[in-house]
Image 1: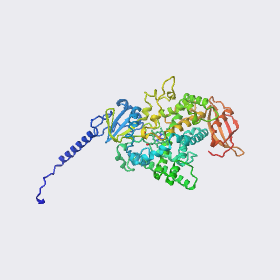
Image 2: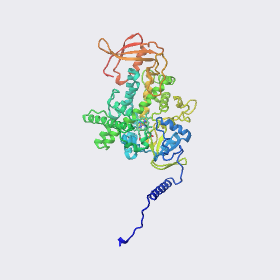
Image 3: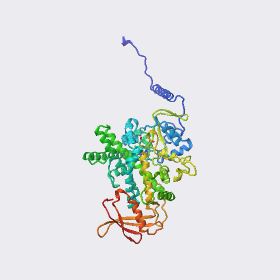
Image 4: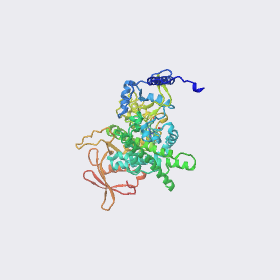
Length: 573
Ligand code: HEM
């Protein structure tokens, strides 16, 4: 019976088949679009899309992207939409929009996108900074947030910062020209002590060098490299011409694995030997072992690694900007020093408790965060639901790029934004101070930087202490003219207040005692008095851990050179 059943001949010619498939796809996508956007709202404004490529050529990817976005925003407005190769990007260029979307609608604007370069090529799915909800965000975030609450930072981490900042002062005194190295050592030392109880004594420390290598090798803001828009590029073999990004990624992958694994292994060995200094990671391991709070070992490693990765470099960048700002703006420096002289005096270093009495120094901290934002494009967010905003439609999975630099240079909030002008944060003659840059500089909503209280404290104590002790001056050329400083954050000279230290060398006296040679002159080029020199040294050495080192002057030599004896060398630097 079934053999007789004749089916109609459904064989169609291939052009008809193709047309039918295309028509079905168009119908499906129209229906889906209508279902997701029933009011058929337009997308937010943005550059016109081109056939097939969409906005591929308009999306800034060639460095200094924040400037390119800001330029486009002048034409299209503070919220712009780009679409290319099936990806949607929303660029936010004002704090008002960031507040409306990333803060108030944080429940749907707080995921991270796929980020093929960082996660699939470099392998950073372990890194909370770029982790999406499905990659364990909640558990990592909870731990980091808990351990960096303001009261924990104040109680447990401030003493470590205060100690390391004094060592920074000592190192600056020793090698003022190498200030960047010292700042890097300090930032890494604070983080390593907090995270692992590991003491960093030199910038040649294994972990400091690792962090530095990771920083040097990894580059490109998430969401701004081509492979993020064309994930298929991740399959290019690393030997292929033009696949340099892949070769670099392999190196970063190995380095960042080492950055998590090595300190963890060290702390485990120390815990086993009973010599571990209490730290964030040791406490997590111990809680785990006691069954009090069971956390996956990988999560503990990841948390240790992310604090190191996210915390050291950001602080260094902010402080480097501070040094540059001071070298360029001596009047600001003088005003901060006047305040420090009045409030703190010359017999001790600033303390955290002084902050409320130091409004100008606090304003310098704020202006440092605002002037050259550490993360100009923040970290991209991702939208988990379709949304409507200002009568426009923003589809789910849109990648959101907050232009923090544009927000912190918005002329409506900060007049003459390119100027380094801390006064904007003071209430002068009843005027309202400019908004605190922390509201944008540390990101937004559920992804706001969990290290912000810590970073703010560290910036304050470092800036106040450095200004208390040193003058930061522009280097001069052979004919005595100030050298033009390039804004690449890598120049500047540190000098004692009132005294410029030209050079410092270790020497041994004929009796074999250690000493230092100091070449110094005061601001008018004269030899400083011994009393002034000692005052400067004394201020630097008012530190519990290095109190043991005492200098005594042996002799003053012609040309502004002093020989000082180090009386106690129980601490080697
Ligand atoms: C001047 C110093 C710092 C600045 C300007 C800064 C800025 C930022 C910004 C803009 C974000 C992205 C927020 C967002 O997605 O909206 C972020 C995230 C993060 N920061 Fe910081 N940060 C600084 C220091 C630190 C420190 C010292 C730590 C260490 C505890 C830290 C840990 C983190 C972590 C773990 C994230 C990822 C949070 C998440 O994705 O949920 N940051 N930071």
